[in-house]
Length: 326
Image (cartoon, rainbow, N blue to C red; front, side):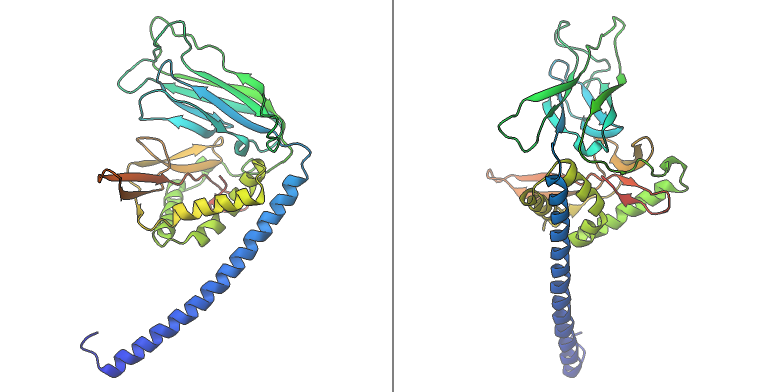
């Protein structure tokens, strides 16, 4: 460009200024449209949630402190909690309403693996349980004066035979009553029967990777509109909570110093009884869609943070397109 004439440089610069000006106008228009769309969505969710006479909030509590075992917990064949590739104890809780599409029988599956460096499931004391788990609900998520939980399921004791126990997996049922009803993925295609499904999944992830690289949260937000709507309703979120959630997601997606990680060491995994699909990292079974951020800590050392973006796709019966549903 240095070798070009001054005249051409001036014309080029003028065109650049013009295109930027037009882009800014279009961006402002797009932002206005997006804000109106978000406001409408929030209003619709608010009306829906306000119409509920009760708002039961279900969660699963778990504890592996007696064994340090690795584990996966699934509700209706959707992962809600896991500890894979990491040693040590974990006592925690996970909300599960987003995995419950409607009232009735629900399914719980647990998978237990030996602690890191071991080939058998063991406990520190033979009189203590290998793994404890319970499912309970608060009667109304908005009633902060009543935080008591109603127990709906308690995991029976898991016996360890003398010959040892290298792995444990079992499915149970429990009842849940919710005021909403979603079709979700209940009538979606069996993805294991879709031709070239692995390539379709990989293409979708590459598409979202490009959005991540370009910090294009607006397009990504449109892709996950149904997911966001259903999850916000299932957790009975208020407008200010929805706005906070959007900001959190946007900040993570558009993190300035984030570097998109390659999709290597990953595999396609089916959930939701083959109606859902994702791409998981083989090592930790977390989402393969992730970024890394390096930042300097107070002690002067450079630390690395990984941000994962868990996504579950489905495919409607009348479509050949994978869509974000959870």
